Amino acid sequence: MFELSPDHEEFRALVRDFAEAEIAPHVAEWDRTSHFPADLIPRMGELGMFGLVVPEEFGGTRKAEGAGADEGGGDFTMLCVAIEELGRIDQAIGITLEAGVGLGINPILNYGTPEQKARWLPDLAAGRHLAGFGLTEPEAGSDAGGTTTRATLADGTWTVNGAKSFITNSGTPITSVVTVTARTGTRDNGSPEISAIMIPSRTPGFTVDPPYHKLGWHISDTHGLAFEDCQVPEDHLLGARGKGFAQFLATLDDGRIAIAALATGCVQRMLEEATAYSKQRLAFGKPIGTYQGVSFQVADLAVLAETSRLLTYKAAWLKDEMDAGRRSTQEVKQAASIAKLYTSEAAVTATRIATQVFGGNGFMEEYPVARFYRDAKILEIGEGTSEVQRMLIARGLGLPS
Image (cartoon, rainbow, N blue to C red; front, side):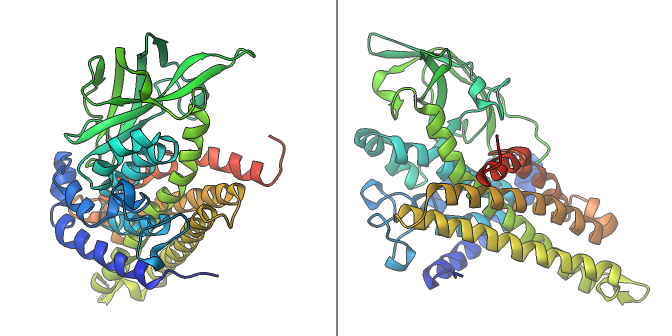
């Protein structure tokens, strides 16, 4: 059906070499201490990882609209390649790139004014800065329409009050801006008018809560945010007033494909770890891979990895085709939900299988399968839970909502 271009594969090798040399030796310690390696981000930026979907005029590597990696520039598929390879070494580093581009850069790229793009995108594309995406609230997760954060406009200034939860890349030393959804009024039918507003870091009234104590993704920067009479100029509105909810839902569609790439990296690593361990670990005088009870589990991992990769790159390819005007939005939305649902659940299954293959050693933090086991579960939750994906897939099939 399709295959990755030589440029995609060359970039994969570049990212893999970087991840194995610059991340793998340190990742266990970073995970143990919940250390966010801020100095790593600009080095990832130097390799072009953050600028793959950003046009050259704003500091990225993407060529003219519709141009892909075969023309020497970046595209969405290449971003997924990078996320997969980072995720193969560490899921938290992978989500830092995924969120930095999919949730930080993309809203500005897709809905920003020329002035907003010129102000924010060059540093974000270079990895000098990171941006966050504030949608979830303490009482509004999958029900994002239940947003209670409010923004009022008076005398050319937005005043924002409210709180956000579980926001990635929101409190790092290099975070420059967080885009948040807020109620900016009420429509004639009584429903809330929700808009997107960009709030620069360190704006008075913008407080970043202490980092969460998480089950997994220990290296990833994740915070709650609070806004108390936080004021920004009127021109910090992102996109049209009242369109913020729709904009953020569209942003999540692309993000689901990127999460699928992250999950694929997880499954691939579990296949590699279980295969190697099954050849080395002896039981009853033979490698444990000799026994069908183990070899069948490793074979299942191979099926999970192959299927995850095919679904992910089909969805990424469709996304690039849509950007070139050759595929429909609905086709991409359906492929994104299918890929995200399958790969996230495959990752949870793969980490469970790999841990079982490792036996007691799989329960020890000195082996990477334990870290991947902890990290995998959030893949079924973030950027739309598995239940939400099933709902969207059913809706895409024409079933009544």
